[in-house]
Amino acid sequence: MTRITCRQLSPGVADLDSNLEMTTAAIRESVTAGARVVVVPELATSGYMFDSVEEARSVAIRPSHPVFADWAAAVAPADGVAIGGFAEIRDDGLIYNSAAVVDASGVLAVYRKVHLWDKEKLIFTPGSVEPPVVDTPAGRLGVLICFDLEFPEFPRSLALRGAELIVAPTNWPRESVPAGERVPEVTVAMATAYSNHVAIACCDRAGRERGQDWNEASCVIDQRGWVVATADESGVATADLDLNLSHDKSMGDLVDVFGDRRPELYEALTHATPLISRPTL
Image 1 (cartoon, rainbow, N blue to C red):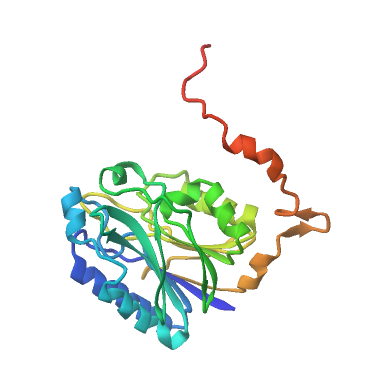
Image 2: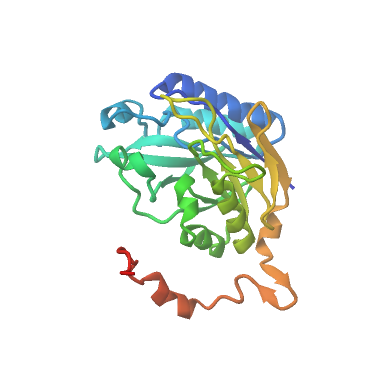
């Protein structure tokens, strides 16, 4: 069994030093409590509600930043892995909404969010490379960021490449939902886990930032699509999962969610031109 913990933190916008300290402490505390996989939110080192590209640039960091060495030291006692979001600046001066995968040796991979949400498009440059599947000491992890989960081709590609767990740092804006219902983002993640038979860990954020509240809907979902952990009052969602179960894609003696695929029929559909105008009634 692998213990997975999502830490639903409340980063401060443009408060780099405090956010770095907070994320490192959360990872260290989670490992002390037995976690081998620790996820912190999207843009956890920088905050989210930027006023300008210049403000984002002021707290953007590189994968070589010392904070990732601190994360590496924090996961080392468990031979574990931490995944978290950061505002990344590259040599071209562009800013990306990125996530780092860190084990005791350092940064294993960086993913740059491809599907930017709403006003993120005014601040960040979209990534141009497919999300990675990363072999880590705690398992084979696929990485997405928030809105990426709502494009089914991405989690499907991770599952096809052997991901045992999809980790998704998120910042889900507060929504009103009918009584008894989950927020739509969690429902999407549940359906994604079910249709791909792969576990998913979504780490949302907390707090109010420049008037914006959040769903605070961190969750761990097993490979059958069931939510097995949500954030408690302290913002911690923890579950023990057998990640080997994500390799079993069967749903019965004659049903296999991957074996029954017809990819030769999907290719043309994938490249179909979207309908962008309303039909005349």
